[in-house]
Length: 71
View 1 (cartoon, one colour):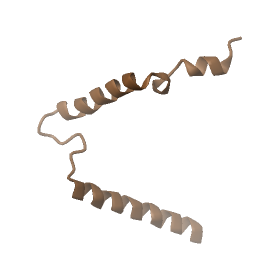
View 2 (cartoon, rainbow, N blue to C red; view 1 turned 90 degrees about the vertical axis):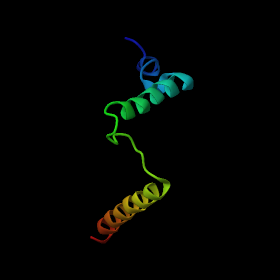
View 3 (cartoon, rainbow, N blue to C red; view 1 turned 180 degrees about the vertical axis):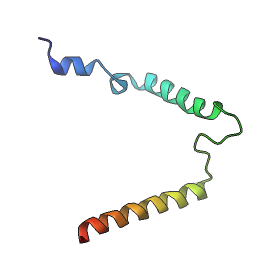
View 4 (tube, rainbow, N blue to C red; view 1 turned 90 degrees about the horizontal axis):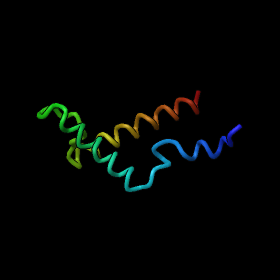
């Protein structure tokens, strides 16, 4: 029977070298913008929009944790 750890090490995105990972991730990001030009499928937010939505998400998460903790 093969060693399970040895088999797992040879599989998946995480086992690839960093340069290969970057190339694949870059291609995916470019594809998201090329699928339907003019349709904002990729994240194309201004820094202000990103900050706003990031804070909004953090607030929602904080509220969920408060609800769980209090009851």
